[in-house]
Image (tube, rainbow, N blue to C red; front, top):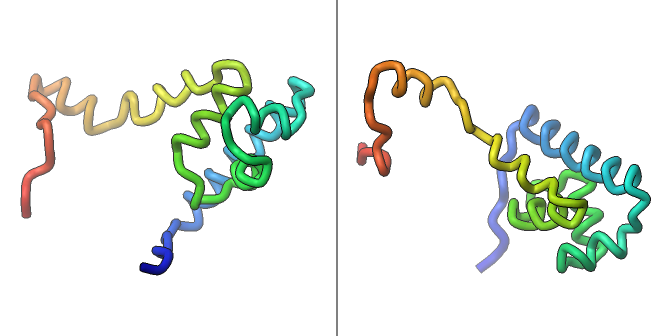
Length: 104
């Protein structure tokens, strides 16, 4: 089996690249070497560099490990999709969020 091609929308790619740049800046502000952060995260330096470039092929778990290695920044991931518009509408209508999506 060959590699699957990941299709990322341009706006999403910019967000991932921005996140990578923010991770790199956080590492540099803490004066931590790439080698040290990679070791703490349990990844190679090359993978850390891919994270810092915003590579969409890097697993979200690796992004989380790098954020944790930077001093517990992985807790910010809990904010992702925490208060989206659909959740708010379900709450306002006193509806229960389904456990899974319906088949089409």
